[in-house]
Structure formats: C-alpha cells, structure tokens
Length: 265
Image 1 (cartoon, one colour):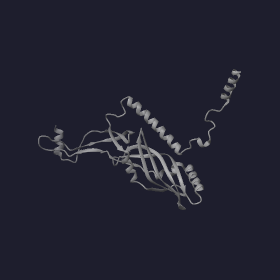
Image 2 (cartoon, rainbow, N blue to C red; image 1 turned 60 degrees about the vertical axis):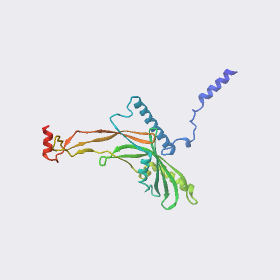
Image 3 (tube, rainbow, N blue to C red; image 1 turned 30 degrees about the vertical axis):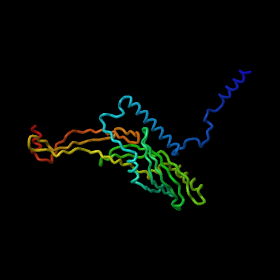
Image 4 (cartoon, rainbow, N blue to C red; image 1 turned 45 degrees about the vertical axis):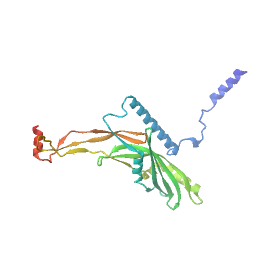
C-alpha cells in the first residue's frame, strides 16, 4: 500500500500552487511604502557592501592619491536641523512640515529619517505625524563655493496615528489615498539639500619674493577637485576627494621684476 500513497502525495505536491502564490494583497510591497523604503535601503546597502568588498580585496577601497574627509552623523544632523522647520503645501487640501532629521552612516549606507506633520488646510487641528525615509545621494562639490553638498533621495513615507475629532479614520484614509496617488513627488519640497561644512579651495596663491638671494615670481596654482567616492562607515560619511591641477601660473598682476627674475632662471 505504501507506493500508491507516496504516488498520491507526489501528485498532490506537483498540482499544489507554489509557496507564497496565495499571499494576500496586503503582503505585497507597495510603492513608496515603509516596507518598500526598507527594501530600497537594503538593496543599496548590499550593492555598496559588495563593491566595497571587491575593492578592498584589490587594495583600492581607499585610493592613496585621494584626500579623505570624514564628517560625523552629528555634524550632518546639526546642519540639517538648521534648515528646519520646512513647511510647504503638499496638495490642495493638505500642508506638510518637517521638524527633525535623524542621520545614520553605518555599513556603507547613509540613511536619513525626516519627521514632521501633515494637516488639513481647512482644520489645522486635524493632523497626522509624517515620516519620510531616504538616504544621502550624489555628494559633490559646489563649483562656486567649494562646499561639499549632498542630496537626500526619498525612498518612502509613513503616516503615523492621526488626530481628528469624529473623523479620524476617514481623514487618514483620504490622506493616505492622496499620498498614494501623488507619491513622493508631493513631498519632495519638504526635503532640504545638505551642505556639509567642509570647503575645498579652488587654488593656492603665492605673493612671490623679489630681491635677495632667492627670487620667486608671484603666481597661482589652480586646483580642480571632485568627489571620487563616498563611504558611510562607522558613524562617519567619508568623502574621497580627487585633486588635480593644470600647473603653476605666473601672476601677471605682479611687477615685471619678479616675472623677469622668474624667466632668467
């Protein structure tokens, strides 16, 4: 009798739907949801860790020719806090405000959590706590000021418990519906850019020395700097800066004696 029983079990397994195919719709990751945000965060972190491991094995994680600048979580969080509160209309019916940022630079991932509130224009007492989830993105150098700048890429949002008199459920449902339709586009105006308090000089000026045993012409050494790599590690955001120059340039503004001394040598 055992072979027929085993045969029926095998047929039942073959005909059964795959595991997970009967999931409820609520189990599916919806766009811009907190679960989708965590998924994006993990995907970026895994990709960054794989790249870091590969480069570390080749001895290229920290290039010896780059300048390493490390900024702590506390510094970036303080800089962000100076931009708050940021208050903007997010739709015809709702206003949003961000009051606080929490920054984390761990395991090759720079994550940012923005906390605030969204409320009805018709009744400010009707509100919900709002959380925006994202990460540090596109660190570069401002060409005009030399200051390091970064953007916050939004991954998702979450609405916490709302406060409304007699209509909490319906109001929250309408808010979530609005955010679901417009997504992160409606909330982008609530996100500040990040100015990291580190400036890269665009050149070095030397006044020159004229007379005596040594004569050095005045000149300028132009510097070109760009962010080669960003490494969020152990509570710091490390920016690897590649610096190059087109070469020394004599200053035409100085006296001809200094320039002539430079030519005669």
